[in-house]
Amino acid sequence: MRLILAAAAALLAPLAPALAAPGCPVAPGTTSRVTVGDTGRALLLHVPAGAKPGRLPLVFALHGSGGDGAAILAQSKLEASSDRHGFLVAAPDAGIPVERGFVWNIPGVPTVTGKVPGPGDADDVAFLKTAIDWLASRGCANSKRVYATGLSGGGRMTSWLGCVASDRFAAISPVVGLRAGNPLASDKTRPDPATCTPKRPMPVIAFAGDADGTNPVQGGGAGYWQYTMEAAEARWAALNGCTAGPLRRDLAANLYERLHTRCRAQAEVAAHILRGGGHVWTADNDAMWRFFARYSR
Image (cartoon, rainbow, N blue to C red; front, side):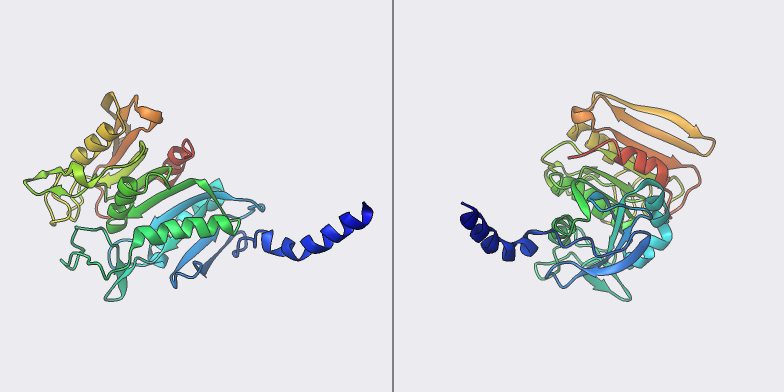
């Protein structure tokens, strides 16, 4: 019997290294650029200071149109929030190059250049899904606790992820970019319900400023915008089956909230509007994380 067990152990020994997780490639408290598997694309990954080995919650930070991953980290200050709260931050570049930066591929919606992405453009949703799987396989990320936020065009991309990748993301937080599908062709003051069909309720906390002239909360603007932010909130509330709200309340002298509650799977829809706020990172990162931390997939 001992000989049999010894022989079996000898046969299995060469397999052990292949079965072991390779480990997260970024040291705690640092941000590094890592290439995702064999995609040929990279992202900036921040691992929180003091992180112990193990899979952590993951927040994707998506840059605005014409920006890149480094720009959104600088604008959002999410690395410091990561260190306070213990979540990973992944900041990829979008897949469509434009001038010195990149824009996101939201099918059927023109980018800031006016061009609608075509079949030859990079599939950003597929890349982000691959990045989740790769970061989980490396022992970095908890695939049940993945969230997305983004600024402007990155906020619109974040909204799109809620529409088409609700099976991979536990909650979303668009910043000056909340949408709920493309504008309806016959009435651009309404979102087209056929273009946002999540498989499960999607918790949403959105941030904006009421003086934003690029993506106005009052609607209008560019062809990709048009309907009001409140119409987007109402559509998400309907998708989530919310039966209470919108409750409006002041959170501070310069800040108010609209909130939809009593939703399926407790998937609330909240909007924080900064009075006088423009087209900038208006998010309260701590409030965003408190919201995210309530949800897992």
